Amino acid sequence: MERLTQPEEDALRVLWPLPAGGFVKDVLDALTAPPPPYTTLASTLRNLERKGYVRAEKLGNSYRFVPVVTADDYQRRSLGTLVQHHFQNSYKDLVSFFAQEEKISAADLQEIIRLIESKKPE
Image 1 (spheres, one colour):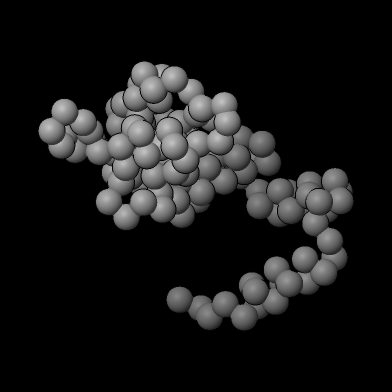
Image 2 (tube, one colour):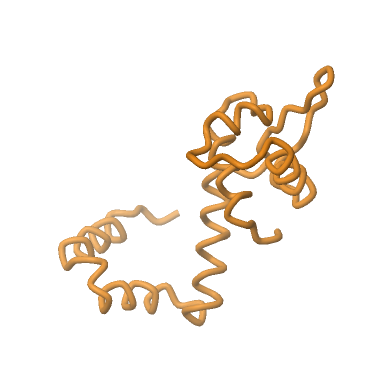
């Protein structure tokens, strides 16, 4: 799937928790200041539809935008792309980078190890 711009990602983050999707106004009301113009946001949502992240349902004179990609799927794909492009497809290198930058503590790493070791084989 195509990469998202920051405004597209922001709009999608607003739509994910809405059970039936949302209208442009719903997204506009939920975005933090300064909100984009209505027409700009409408174009952003149409771009999300074109890219396959949402579907638009016509209701009267408006469109309701419903996510077709879950937040978990998007996170998985985004992280996978990041690791592939910046860490030679090595999650070990990703974790090592955060350790070297002091963004993750030894206690965090121990917790990650516990999670890995407690995971049941599938």
